[in-house]
Image (tube, rainbow, N blue to C red; front, top):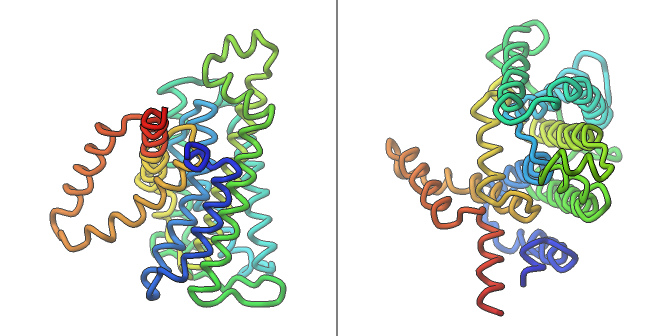
Length: 314
C-alpha cells in the first residue's frame, strides 16, 4: 500500500488506471474541465515539489514561468507564424534558459532571502506582461489559437483529457526516475544539509540549478497547454496569488512526494468548485479546511496517510 501511495511502479499503474477510468466517472463538460485543470496544475506541482520538497529550495515565483509558457504559445504563432507545437517547445527552451540565468545568482541565497528573490522574479514577470500592451495585450489579455499535433487540432474535452492525462503520466514517470536516480539522492542530500552534501563530494550548486531549470520548464509546458485549452490568457497567470496556490498544493499534498503533488493539485482544483455554493463564505471555509488539514496531516496528505497505513499494517 505504501508503494501505491508513493507512486513507485505499482503507483504508476494505479495512476494509469485512474486516468483510464476517468471518462467512466466524468459526466459532463464541467467535470472534464476541472479534471483537465487539475492535471495541468499537477504537472506544475510535480516540478515544484522536486525543487521545494526534494532539494529544499523555495520558489514563490513559479507562476511567472507558467505565464511565460502561456504567452509564448499565444504570441509566437500569431506574430511570427510558429507552429503551435513549435511555439510550445520554443517557449520551454527560452524559459529553461531564463531559469538557468536567474538560478545562478538567486540560488546562492538561502531561506527567506531565496523566497524574496523568487518572489521578486515573479513580480517582475507579471509587471512586464501587464505593461507590454502592444505585445501581450496588457491587463486585458489576449486570445490563444488551437493546439495542433500531428496535423490534428486538439478539440473537445475528451481529446484534451487524454492529452493531459498522458502528459501527466509521462511527467510523473520522469520525476520518479529522477528521484530514484543518483540525481535524486543528491537532491535529498542537499535538502538535508548543503555543507554535509558538499563534504561528500556533491556539487550542490549544480544540482540546485538543474532542478530549478527542470521545474521551470515543466511550468512553461503546463502554461502553454493551459493557454491553448483555455483559449485566452491574462497576466493574472503570473500573479503572486497563483504562485502561492501552487506552493499550497505542494505543501497540502506532501513535501518530497510525487503522489502528494498530484493529490494536492487535484484537491485544491476541485475544492473551490465544491465550495462555490457558500458564496461570501467560500474563502473562509476554504481557509478553515486547509488549516484543519495541515493540523491533522502535518506532513501533507499522502505522507501522513502512508505513515498511518504502515503503522496499522505493522
